[in-house]
Image (cartoon, rainbow, N blue to C red; front, side, top):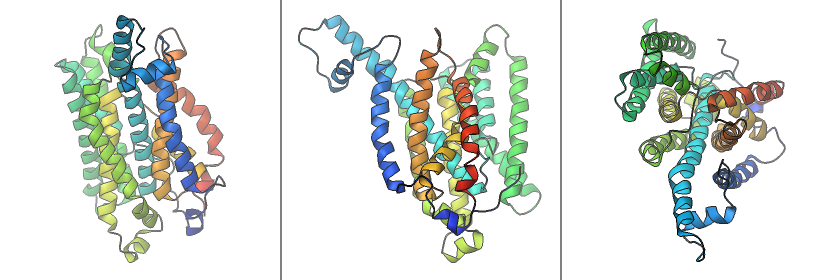
Length: 354
């Protein structure tokens, strides 16, 4: 994987869609609550906006059937709200992580899988499904697998001399291949009638298992990772000018780089623990956001997070509505991602070239 040339300072200060980046940020910040509300109304049991508002705010029509009121409360609070919040959080985490990885490695082809984190998390989740000791073990092993993959990538990168971006990428390729091989071994050992279908379905991505308890456990570290990446946007802008220039501006290059990789790894590994493998969000959405607000990471990271949340809400709606049975959301994001990526490919260099 070739590391592209760093963007020049002219490119760093050139928004690409005509409006000020803050205008796009404000527009997306207003669009996200509307998308969340629409997602709550959508499903095989359609609900009116007034019914959703009543269930969320705790008031009910005095003449309404008590049984239907209880059903609405359960449907909104226990099923749909955790699902749509999970979709938004996962989309934001994958998109922000992809943006941060692309900035750190100065490479538009990088995604959250660059250090093998998604492969490691998938391997851990498959091991948990093979052990069949409960959903909590799947989530714990998914997180542990993602972190282990990063440690292997960094260890390989340091094994052959001082750590550099190129050696880290090569270490990530090694780590990804290693955990992909281990995942194949786990699938080979799994029971072909029960465990193997569960593993394969999990790897295709699904939001059907998201519940309030899972979100309560995993949302805080994911939000902390997204916030950390957002706060490091100015430091990433300094890194884009080169390590020497960043040093001259007082930026602790190695510490910033390690913190960004740590935040992006934790956030993206936790998405696998919640919903399995969901591809293309971390690669495609940063390019879409870059076309809107330009390459300045102080605006690009939060824009990507908001756009990623809206993108995955739309993908989840398609996954539930395209067929009689729910499609794996990872399949839907791939079907959307491929043609959209072709459309934005001609403009990708606009956000990177000087």
